[in-house]
Length: 319
Image (cartoon, rainbow, N blue to C red; front, side, top):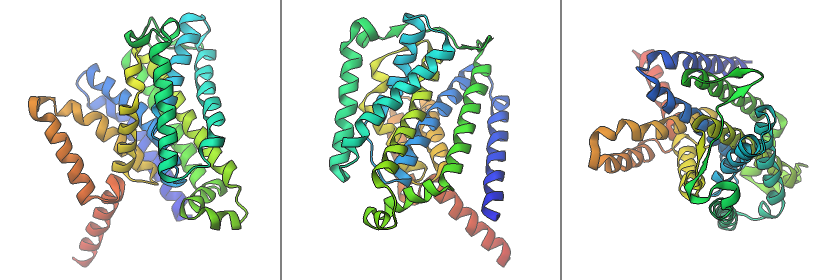
């Protein structure tokens, strides 16, 4: 009961923070950064379910982000589909591709699994670059329409932010419910020991495939929203470098932590923008901050913050 109350409180505080955040920003430039933070948090949340809870590594998750973006762009800008169909199409393609590759890929473990997902990501990136007639190739895909759903046009950045923030909040709610469910307990058991989980009657293959597809759905939704936000996409946004960034966000935020996924994504997405003032040494500061976080907060931002709060409460109670 206490855990449920804590979850509800956390979701309430998160909703309030998302709703109030734009009020503290001076202009639309920072709202655009917030939109990217929310989109990255959505992808990282799905990846954290896969890596942090189920213990399955993916070095090609940017590919699902790209599949959602390009499919939606092709459906709406090229085929002329309404966005009410184009966005679900992008999510469906990402989910179907994940379902197809999950069966052979998730039989692997450790480095083999990492290499397999890396190979998948590279193949998708090559397709994005070489299928010039469909994707525009390295030059990118232009002319993607701004989002309009059921007659409501999201023309302003602030309106788009509230849409994306709402999607992120719903994904957080779904993730929390999943973690606290029987499926979530099965995923954690698989992470600890697949042999023990199988002995307990857990369907290992089905559980892995489910969380892999779910994480791809999160990435596909983010990709579709990303495409309609920027109205331009290019293969460079969905390559190996971004996959590594996503994993860094998961680890830095805190493995097996929903709030850690959000914290890691917001921190690493916004950090480069705040380091621009340092010009030539911004990369050095960026790297130093990452090293410091890993050294002094090995459990991630979420775990480190929780530990600090516990120490503060103990200090207050002793005082």
